[in-house]
Length: 112
Ligand code: SF4
Image 1 (tube, rainbow, N blue to C red):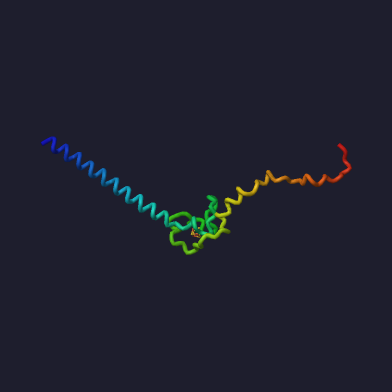
Image 2: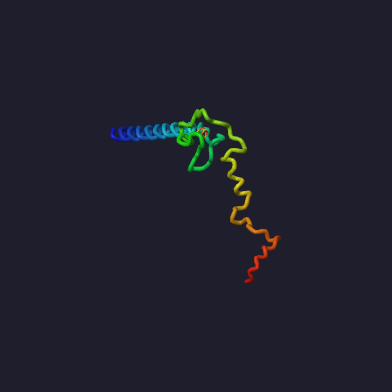
């Protein structure tokens, strides 16, 4: 009789464990699907800058409240979030020479 009770308890614990895993997975999938409905990454007003995520609704951007945002505009190639890669194409300002070596310096009359 004791063996039967132990087996029953183990089976009950296993069923509850598997049930809780399935509930957690279902909730995780639901939450992921919900987060993928946030349209900000495809919006024209999204800046891709953590300091100001959106120029229209900064407090709502990238949250669940942004789902169904009435100010959503599809992103174009001129959007701020698309401009990031141009910084890599151009040299940083520190590397750009400030003087033109082909032009001789002006004669100042000061001799060194
Ligand atoms: S306007 Fe709306 S959809 Fe667009 S980035 Fe701002 S909050 Fe997101």
